[in-house]
Amino acid sequence: MPRKQTHEIEIDAPIEAVWKAISEGEELTRWFVEEATVEPRVGGKRVTSWGGDEKSESRIDAWEPNQKLRVLHLPFEMGNAKYDGTTPMVDEYTIERRGEKTVLRLASSGIPDDKEWDGFYNGTNTGWASFFRTLAHYLEHHAGKPRTTIKIIGMANGSRDDAWPRLRAALDRRAVLVHEKAPGALEMSIPELDNAYLWHTMSPGEKGFVYTLISLYGKSPAEVAAIEAEWRPRLEQALGMGS
Image 1 (cartoon, one colour):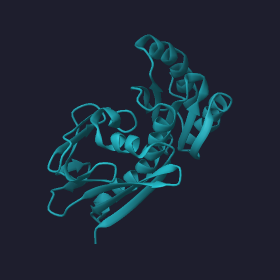
Image 2 (cartoon, helix red, strand yellow; image 1 turned 135 degrees about the horizontal axis):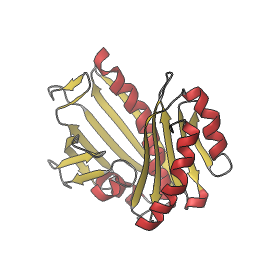
Image 3 (tube, one colour; image 1 turned 120 degrees about the horizontal axis):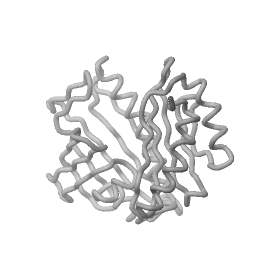
């Protein structure tokens, strides 16, 4: 039996802004991916990428502005998970107003109930919750502003249990907590960087794999370079990524 997962978030933004955020390529790059293109029609293609050659492609099956967007995944491979398109794998977004806020829901269905797909299912189940928090932050604090990201990726010299207290000590007086799941995941807003958004994960093990992302909005290349020069070494030291 194929598996399904659902996600929902309330966003303090107009319904039109939420629709744009999920249906326009440029908007998708401000909270979700590095690159995106969207053909805005039923039968159109949506292509997203986190950079590099790997891309995710889907076909638009429903296009109802400010109400519903449904996409069908096209065949892909992700590690041991191989999707041939025989059984539809679907992402359906629906939008509605709830009082003064907009509610965005996502129902992902058709995920195979096989061991090879456990990593995909668990990863997307956690990932979508995080992406939705990033989306809410973008629309509530930076709507319409382009995003530039600073990435810290690689193997640490120690475990995430060791790195966690150092990371929190480096951030606690400079950032506002949004979400945490110690010692592996952390999301924070950074007021001194005009409410930049920090997203961090670190895998278990003696030497954990680090993926830390700072999303900056409306910054010039010079401003981004100056921020990176200050923040990268601080975070790398806290995470145990130096020599």
